[in-house]
Length: 270
Image (tube, rainbow, N blue to C red; front, side, top):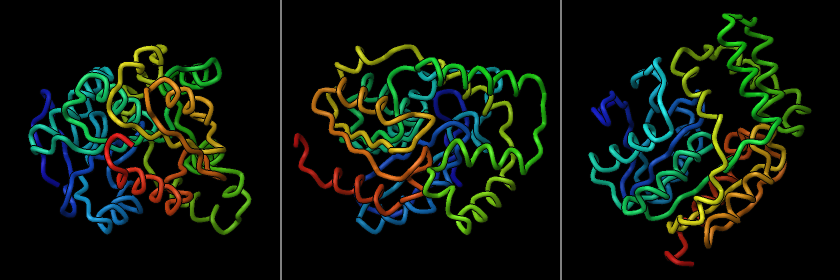
């Protein structure tokens, strides 16, 4: 993968396809490679050039274990867009990546054409705040969970009941999760960013066309929190993908890819 020096850090990225550019931003602990399972093939087949990258905190990009802010991550994406001469481009973000995309739309609308926000929120409720604090305390305590236990908990948190009840699918998911290495110090730094303040009022100033995609069975960012973001952004559209958890773009990629591509095909302003 090529590397850029952006915003004072090392940022690794991958550039695939040709056509109008789409930049994709992963969530907490996510690698750029996750997008290449389903979303990148669909977007390149639809005629788009897709740029994926590893957020700061995720090797081989700079881990920045000392910590960082959402503003730093916004600066990373802005720098990537400017260095690759992509503006105005389309952006897709999920979870933390959607938070970054929202803030980018607010601060640098000149860089953007359209934005898709998946599994997003504009505030943290009590349950999600408690979960974040518990994860941070677990990490800081130095507890090393058995890989199989870690895999099962990850499945229960991120997948829908439909997937959890599919025995064959669960064999595959658990194998993937079990052999995924636990997050390092950069992932710990990303966890801090889940302690977001209420940004819904600020999002009333976003003028970039946005489409919010929520997942019906998402425990991490429930659909009603995504609806709040769509309601806050003037003109934003909203839809819920059924029978999917937080990893909905992996559970039902066909439905999610359809949402994204159909939104991108709309004339700007509609």
